[in-house]
Image: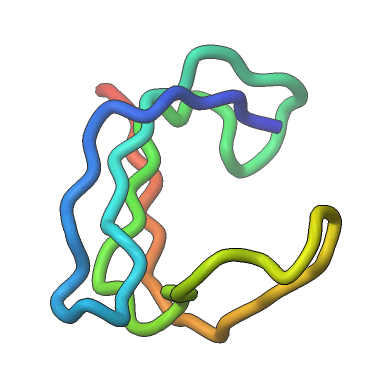
Length: 75
């Protein structure tokens, strides 16, 4: 499990795309594939953007999207 904090964000290629993100790992737990990861990036996003307000508190809305996730370790 990784806990992250947002380092940077950049808009997607179109107005319908969720932003690209760069996250810094601030803590991690366990020992697995993500052990030692220091940065997580979400890039090449397509879709996912919702317009307007929710109809009521607690309502659920979703929008399909695709993205690539990059996990980086410091050498």
